[in-house]
Image (tube, rainbow, N blue to C red):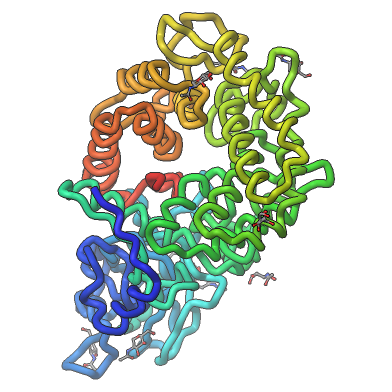
Length: 534
Ligand SMILES: *[C@@H]1O[C@H](CO)[C@@H](O)[C@H](O)[C@H]1NC(C)=O
Ligand SMILES: *[C@@H]1O[C@H](CO)[C@@H](O)[C@H](O)[C@H]1NC(C)=O
Ligand SMILES: *[C@@H]1O[C@H](CO)[C@@H](O)[C@H](O)[C@H]1NC(C)=O
Ligand SMILES: *[C@@H]1O[C@H](CO)[C@@H](O)[C@H](O)[C@H]1NC(C)=O
Ligand SMILES: *[C@@H]1O[C@H](CO)[C@@H](O)[C@H](O)[C@H]1NC(C)=O
Ligand SMILES: *[C@@H]1O[C@H](CO)[C@@H](O)[C@H](O)[C@H]1NC(C)=O
Ligand SMILES: *[C@@H]1O[C@H](CO)[C@@H](O)[C@H](O)[C@H]1NC(C)=O
Ligand SMILES: *[C@@H]1O[C@H](CO)[C@@H](O)[C@H](O)[C@H]1NC(C)=O
Ligand SMILES: *[C@@H]1O[C@H](CO)[C@@H](O)[C@H](O)[C@H]1NC(C)=O
Ligand SMILES: *[C@@H]1O[C@H](CO)[C@@H](O)[C@H](O)[C@H]1NC(C)=O
């Protein structure tokens, strides 16, 4: 397996000479041009004539008859773009029988949610109504700025009147990663003799791309499900679910650095979090508009600090680090007040990713804090500012010892979630996230890390993946939490376990299983969670 980072100058040379020379381009899912046409018709309903014409990006009149005619109420065509895409619709109205007519579009990532009545939802638990173009007459139409839709694979053209309307040239402007002139022009490449790993790597890189959006098209909180629109300014950069989440960047940041090296959205996302820092040092759990509601999460606070560390390590941008340094130090110091006489932090907020029971002397939170302090010490040395370093060293020093004393359960070779539960408790009391982070942070190393790796592996649920037992129903498969488990297997000296897990969970299940194929490219929730770390 090799990483082939291509120096910028060489990359320009490649682009200048021939795009066809881009290494491993057969794996790159990003389009080279932003105007996309559907690749197939998934289904039609009602009275539709010449549906196949919608597969051609040619306007009416270019060849014999490239119009598709929808007659009567409830006629529709579902177009398949072959993979998840993101952006806005445009089309041409060629003729209408009654002078003017309406035509609508619904969007869906999964074939399970294709509907002529509604879209899959921007927010969980409800559906969005179609995007309607009403009273159209012959001419060109395109979606406004606030109708740039997040990821979808299926686009259903809906007709809801007794008239007949003929349309053509339905295309989607791929609006993701607006900062890239050519979305397929990667600066880093991965290749191995394992086709599954190659496909997983490029699927991850592409998912990150469709998670980078024009920041002025963020989710507008409280937007009605009918008449949805995306026109909220979430930051100077954003993501597919249109909210900045610092925990996701722990996964997506390193992946972006090694694929597109598109650093701007990451820096913008970090800025949007520090902008809302409280004077006591607390950072918001998510970017705005959620930051305005200000939930504080112990773990997401630390994730933001670690995003800064990663950003600096990959960019070398010392001026940027200097600009955040005082705020960063304030941020590192804030959680230290929760470290009690046990040596562990006693977490008093429940906010975290989709797990339950985030409080008390929690192994995940303490491992992430330990990792944060190690990173902070490294950055302090780089900044020539060790004013806080002895405090940070002292705080960190007690964590592995206390975790060993209070949380390690030798009988199962795993840490308990917290010290309110008994040794030898049900498996759900030994979290995937906390045990993975204990290895990543170096709280567990050597033979203990190897034992944790084996114990986590013993819980795998083939053919699906590694369970996040701490999530609410105990058998959730989370690409987010499992991304950390993968790192733990590597760090424990078990790369074979990591490769096995990547193959069956990310390739066989998430990319190739019919159940997941229905969901387009990658699972619907946990957008950037789907990525492998670098
Ligand atoms: C194109 O075909 C549609 C239905 O197939 C028909 O209604 C329309 O009149 C045709 N247009 C032209 C210009 O032939
Ligand atoms: C089809 O639509 C695309 C996107 O709006 C546009 O660029 C192109 O010119 C259209 N083609 C014709 C023949 O109208
Ligand atoms: C179609 O139009 C009717 C009447 O205007 C309306 O009640 C119905 O909700 C519409 N269907 C959709 C999918 O918008
Ligand atoms: C647009 O047309 C659709 C379908 O007939 C209808 O449900 C919707 O209410 C209309 N919207 C407006 C703003 O008239
Ligand atoms: C179209 O059909 C739907 C469902 O059958 C109905 O609710 C709606 O009123 C109809 N719209 C028109 C304009 O006839
Ligand atoms: C967003 O769009 C909605 C609906 O068009 C509008 O009411 C609102 O004022 C817009 N907000 C901004 C910030 O443009
Ligand atoms: C301790 O862990 C258990 C098992 O995961 C969990 O149910 C409980 O809520 C946790 N306690 C606290 C205080 O978070
Ligand atoms: C953590 O702190 C809370 C609030 O001060 C307290 O009620 C709780 O008992 C503490 N938990 C532990 C395990 O010390
Ligand atoms: C830290 O000090 C070294 C040695 O004096 C210097 O080269 C470096 O630029 C300093 N770093 C910063 C961030 O000021
Ligand atoms: C392993 O972990 C223990 C306990 O945290 C620590 O004392 C030791 O230095 C670590 N060893 C290495 C090689 O990191």
